[in-house]
Amino acid sequence: MQEIEKFIRETYNIDVKNIAFCKDVYIIESNNGKKALKKTELPEERLNFIHCAKEYLYNNGFTNIDRNLCTKEGKPYTIFNDEVYVLCEIVEGRECNFNERKDVIESARALALLHKCSKGFRPSDEWSRYDYLGRLPAYYRKRLDEIKKLKKIARRGRNKFDYMFLNCVDSFYNTGEDVIKKLYQTKYEDIVTRYREEGILCHHDYAHHNIIFSSKGVNIINFDYCCFDLKVYDVANLIKRKMRKCNWNFEEAKVILHEYCSIEPIDDDEFFILKLMLQFPQKFWRVVNKYYNSKRSWAEANYTYRLQEVLDEVEESSKLIEKFDYLR
Image (cartoon, rainbow, N blue to C red; front, side, top):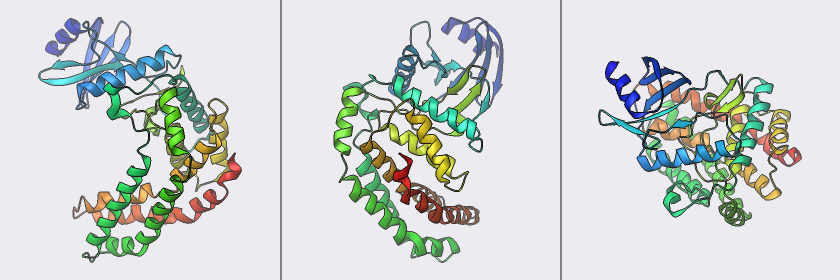
């Protein structure tokens, strides 16, 4: 520990009181709270982007984040023993519980505030690879093409998962095709153009473990996947995560949208795209793709169960989609 302590003292402007090592992370107690020195595989360009995104949010009033600490040279990362590390604030508290309506309400409001405070953070040539605006139709097409390839593989199989997959794949595939068709009929490209002009940041991993409740309120952490995209991408993720906890309950979805829109409105065109995002068979693709690309002996029972979960959701999620326009 002496080596890393010496390195931290020489690299950062913090007074180290104690260091502990836990799960590949150095936990540092300092004169200014706890910090985490974490090894990362992300490229330096990505780390610079994440740092700039966090600083933009912080300077615009969204301060409840795991802010990065820069080195004495002003870099948001450092090299130690030929490995790349980042030093960030530790946000102490509890993870969001999507079973609790109060947690979901606060999470929806925090997400809206994040999007609101990110306005003006625009894509540039330097950050073009993190600009996901306009990519949705091609992304959905790629996923459907992958499902089609997996169907060919399944036809050569003989186990329970193969038969389950083949029995339902056409229905999910056709749903995906319908989503893409309707997406081209929306004002998606106009919205993309507007977003590029206005600037907005999406978290892109708005999961319970990245939403921390502390004495300061709701904190959002882990911006490793943040990018420029439609805000309804994050909203759709939040709704789906909650819906799987409440059997796609209409009233629970209504609460999320009401709380979010009380801070950051969603217009009619974005609302329709949100509806399409909830329809696309993303979870179906994820389960079958992971199964056919793992092919471990223990995987069949696990993935058969997960595929059955997807099938069990179809009826209730379809009911929500049918009534979705009444959520406005």
